[in-house]
Amino acid sequence: MTASPVFRPAKFAFAALAASSLAACGINSVPTAEENAKAKWGDVQAAFQERANLVPNLAAVAKGAAEQEKEILTGVIEARAKATSVQLSADDLTDPAKMAQFQAAQNQLSGSLAGLGRLLVNVERYPELKSITNYQMLQSQLEGQENRIRVAIRDYNGAVQQYNTTIRTFPDAIGAKIFYGAKPMTPYQAATPGADVAPSLEGKI
Image 1 (tube, one colour):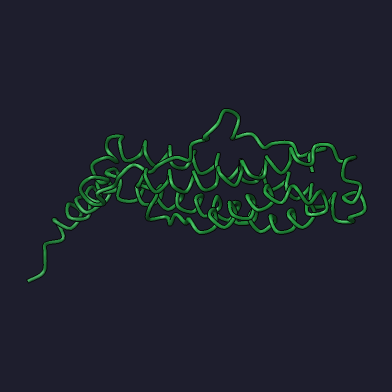
Image 2 (spheres, rainbow, N blue to C red; image 1 turned 120 degrees about the vertical axis):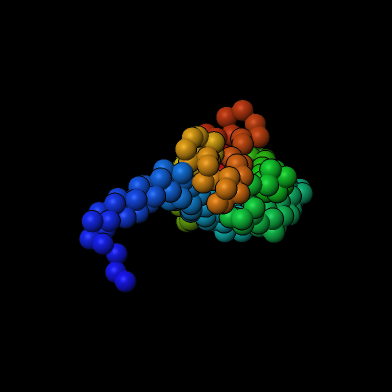
């Protein structure tokens, strides 16, 4: 037995109302915001990895400085190894402890690079560096990479803020809790004042 044509508009209206109600409860907005934040985190990881890839070149340039500075160079290489060994997947972004571990590893590498920069602050002490053709290119690459890291972190934190707001705001919070069991994501925190600003390497290496 087929449904009476009289009831069909009502059924369609009910279906449309149900669909709009589900959409209003975060069925689409919650996963959309989550995937956006995860994608931005991928950009952060890529930026840090690109910086790590530059470290061997930087160390090779600095080896011409002085034999007694090998301790600093060793620290840079060790910090790079640790930074690249600590990975944070998109599924771990709700774990503050894992985020803190990742940040600590990256901050250690940042500190080591800063120490290497201070080592070579007076280029005149190391005339060998002036003869290296890729010196200026490496300096430019490092400055550019620090900027990319800063931008990637800023974009990730913006996406995290949007996601965290979405899962806490009515009516999206309903779907976030009932359908997804959503948890707040952890932003990337600057460990030291001004750490979110790219350092200038001009005259340091």
